[in-house]
Amino acid sequence: MAQSIVKTALVTGASKGIGKCIAIELGRAGFDVAVNYHSDLAGAQDTADQISAFGRRAVPIQADVGNIDSARNLFNEFDKHFDDIHVVVANAAVQTWKPLLELQVEEWDKVIHTNLRGTFLCTQEAAKRMVSKGHGGSIVTVGSGCNKLAFPRLVDYTASKGGIEMFTKVAAVELGKYQIRVNCVAPGATEVERTKHETGDYAGTWAPLTPLRRIGMPLDIARAVLFFAGDQSEFVTGQTLFVDGGVGAKPQWPYEF
Figure 1 (cartoon, rainbow, N blue to C red):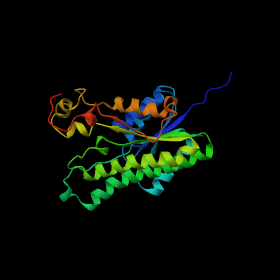
Figure 2: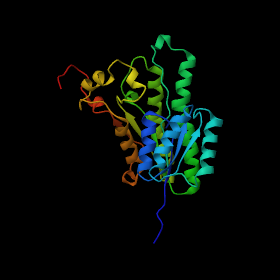
Figure 3: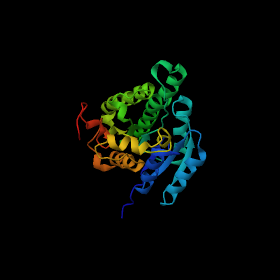
Figure 4: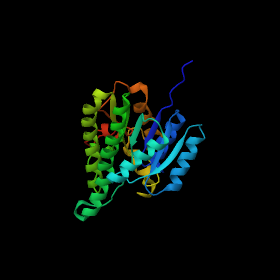
């Protein structure tokens, strides 16, 4: 009997929040997983431990994905632990909550550095390896509801996420001939450690504005990533899937729904 191939995945920013859930769900689905983190080793190790509980290999790897040397080292370290690469999820992101007129250049640069530049570097490094293996692969970028809706006080974050959506489309076009699919998952209001502290009642603020009348949870996002990571989406590329409970579909005029 032919032995089944164990697929491998790398998830950036996987020590907490959505990235953590994505990495764990990939492990649950049978992937061996490289768990990238920037500074939270304890969180990354917890992610890896939960994946290991499924009988899968999981290795925490530190890197600043927006730094070219660090990003390349991330993939070089990946190569030391895993023989092949099938899925990469470019999830690592930071955010500044500040009005445009008060935003500092250093804050803008930090957000673009991690979110947009990091997505570019990780996509490039992953694609080079997938091309050399000759078996294609799936790269999933992580956008946001602000890919298409203007969110005040998030101008740098919005710019980075909108850039990621268009980057995804171009990457999909260029890499399609290698059978590498590139798609974007764009979460809406999702409860994670950070968003719990954005308002006194995050769920109470956003659920009434969402047609499904609830906020998203990390598992909602992880399930969308799993779709793009698996064979069910083998003829899907260059797409953005908004996992937002219908916020982006709401009428933009006064209307009782």
